[in-house]
Length: 421
Image 1 (tube, rainbow, N blue to C red):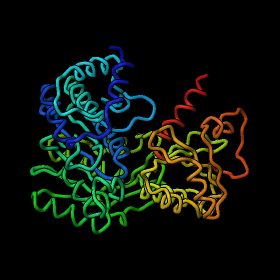
Image 2 (cartoon, rainbow, N blue to C red):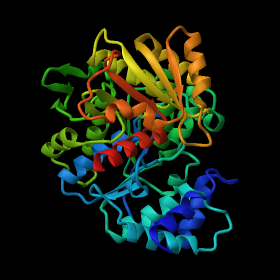
Image 3 (cartoon, one colour):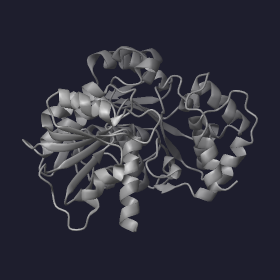
Image 4 (spheres, rainbow, N blue to C red):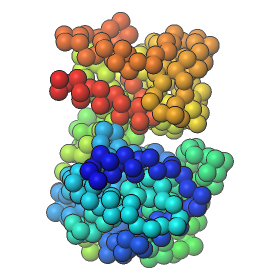
């Protein structure tokens, strides 16, 4: 099969299986030769910030000359974004080759799309002889397919919030317990600042396993015109924007310190250069200056809170035109409530997904909240003013599009096609 056929077949696999992902991936990987047993890992779990933290850490490790595999999800434009080695995406012909081999394996458990993606990544990383693999969980941690790895070098927990509650639990403590499932005896742990309920669970898990946990203290991050600093870490600069990215960057930096202590030397200069040069598309990304358009994959309440805080910090006292496209299984009311005080108007869009919240449902809720709102289904129509040559900021000034990463991917794809035509 060619690349398109292989990826189409994988992407059409079910989203959730009848058995936990860790059980299914164990069977699939065993049939594929257990490539994970020949690799060293940094495992990242959390509700928000996993991808950005992975991007920072991979940039740091590249600067240190450590061959690094990176597995993240979902992709924005192309499937190959999920699997990278030293910042280069897996070649399409290699994805097709490995994917076809996996599809031909006889697996009783019935792997999901994510299971196949993970297995493809691990086989590729083993073939490429990666020294470290930065592995992002899909959902949760304890039962996640990625938790098939036996003992990571370091586990990072990014911000924990309310998401996927139907699977992970109804309280921060329950959700944190699932995330803490990536912790294993003999490893090191790093955590971003957390709500007390979540942090208590994480620390209790580390204590039980007798592993050290380095917890970031948000209140000790100092921002200056030159960048930001943290005790013992000095001054950092970064290309990524957004107040929340500072914790993601520092989590990666603290992880690099742990790796150095474990025999994977990461010089201080590599940490600074990695943080300064790291990029992560679709997260607080300004894709046009005139007219101004920023896109962000804030797809749950905590993500939207972080987006709002960053906008207030970057553009104090300004109002925005928000373009919003979210999934129906998210709490869109809480997400909308956080941005409405900053909104001049809102355009609701229906993303291309069977799980999408209908634009009119969202627009009607926003109008009832006292903010002007339109509903649109045609993405090209919504962004036509930004694609026109010589366009300037409209009457609402800056525009911010946010929501599902699938929605953000649609926007980036639209702009990539238009810019190349």
